[in-house]
Image (cartoon, rainbow, N blue to C red):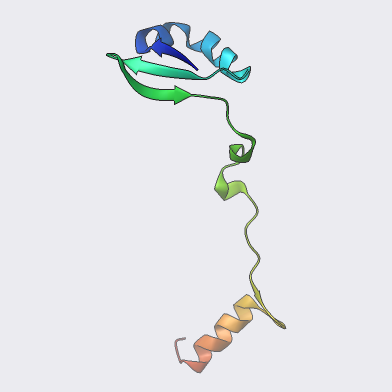
Length: 78
């Protein structure tokens, strides 16, 4: 893990991101204090959660939407 100042990061951002693609990790310092860590993206974080397949919920023997509608009718919610 290498440290780099914020000013140097701004000047060399393109080449630093190329190094990150190769596996390097950088800690960015501002006024001598760490403010960010730049590292390669892990394989599990490539897709945002909203693009990942959702769970398919069902009730045994029927569809979930039908079960919900039946429950609402029994409780006079509709």
